[in-house]
Length: 79
Length: 501
Image (cartoon, rainbow over all chains, first blue to last red; front, side, top):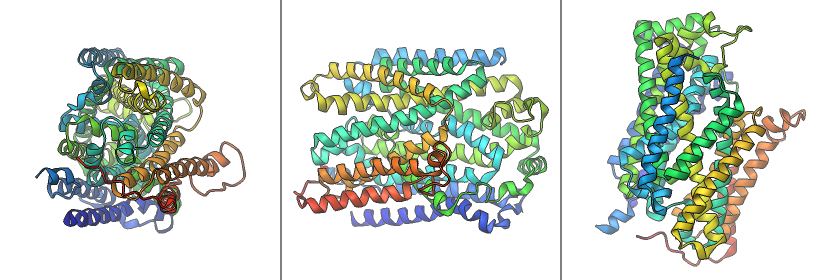
C-alpha cells in the first residue's frame, strides 16, 4: 500500500507540473515567448508542445492503469 | 438550411427515440433507471464519459475560440480535462465505485452514516446540475436556432421534451447509449474534418501557412498572450477545471454504471484515450483549419462583415467549406446530438439525486419501495427539466460561460473536497463535512458575484471586489480547511472506519 501511495503522490506532482503548462498563457502578456511561434517542419512549436503534452497525459493514464498505482484495497483484500 | 441538414436533424431525433424505446423495455428496477443495472462495460462507459467532455461547448466553442484568438486560451481548456481525468483514475474512480451504489450521497453515508450529509449531497448535486443544465440549454437554444432556423423558445422546448423522454422512459441506459452513439459520431466527424483539411491544404505545413496568411494576428496566433488573463485568473481557471471535473455529479455517477472497480478504472483509461485523440485533432488541425478555410470568405459572412452565426459556427462553416452541404448537414446533426446527450446526462444526475438522496431522506419509509423511488425519479426528471427550460428563457441573454464557470466552481469547491476527505481522511466528522461543503458552496457563489463578470458587467460597479471570475484557487482550500478544522474542533473522531468491502 505504501508503494501505491508513493506512486500516487509522485504522479500527482508530475501532473501538477504539467498543469503549469496550461497556466503559461497567463505569463504570455508579460513574456510573450516568441520562440513558441517558431516553425518546426512548417508547424508552430506551440502546436508540437500541445501535442506532446496531450500524448504525455495519455501515457500518464496508461501508466497509472498498468502500473497498479490506483487505490485498489478491495482487490488486495480479496487476494 | 439545406434538406440534407434537416434530414440529418430528423434522423438524429428518430435514432435517439428508438434508443429510448429499446432502453425503456429493458429498464424495470431502480438500479436499471439509476445506473443502467451496473452492467455497462468499460469500453461503453469510456465512450460515455468521453462523450460528456466532447460536448457542443468543446466541439463548437473551442474551434470558435481558436478561430477568434488562436491557441492561447484553447490550450487551457484542452489540457485541464486531460489532467483531471488521470487524477480521477488515480484517486477517485476505484474507491468511489467501492463505496457507492447509485449516488454521491451513498458514498457520503457509507463512511459517516449521516442522513443530513446525504441530503446536503443531493441538494448540491441538484444545484450544480441545474446551473450547468441551464447554461447548456441557453447555448443549445441559440445554436439550434442558428443551425436549423428554429426560434429560441421552440429550440429550448424541443431539447427539454427530448431530454425528459430519454430520462423518464429509458433512464440511465438510454442516456448512456445516446451518449455512446453521439461520441462515436463526434469522433468520426472530427477525424473526417481533420483528414479533409490536411488533404485539401496539402499537409500540416501548408495548413498553418495558410492560417497565418489570412489571420490579422499572423504568427502571433500560435503564441501565448491573446487571452490577456492575469496569472491568478489563469491559475484559478486551470485549478478549478482540473478539480471541478472530479466533482461534477453527472461524470461521477457514471462510475456506478460499471460492475466493479476494475471496470471503473478501465472506463477512465478509455475516456482519456478518446478525449486525448479528439483534443489533439481539435487543437492542432481543426482549429487552424477553421481559420485557413473560413476566415475572410464572403459566403460565411453576414451583412456586417462578421462570421454568420458567430464564432461558435466556425466548425459548421468549416465542414461546409471542406465537404459542401452534405458534410455540413451531417456535422450540424452531430452537434445537435452532442447537445441532446449532454443535457440528458445532467437530467439523470438531477433525477437520481432527487429520488434517492433528497426523497430518500425526506420520506425514509418509502426508501425501501423501489417502484415509488422510480416514480419520483421520473417525476423529478420531468419537473426539473421544466424548471430548467423556464430558467433558460430567463437567462437567454446572459453569459453562458458564466453559468458554466459557476457550476464548475461549485463542483470543485463543494463536492470535490468533501469527496476526497470522505474517501481518504478517517477523522472527518459529519459536522466537518457539512461545514466544508457549505463553505465551498457559499464561498464560490459569493466570490463569483463579487468578481468582474457579475459585480462590474451585470451590477455596473466601477471595480470588482474580487479580482477574478474563477474563485477555485481560494474556495477549494477554504472548503478543505473548514472541514478539517470543524472535524478537529468537534473532537469526536469516533474512528469512523474507512469504507470496507
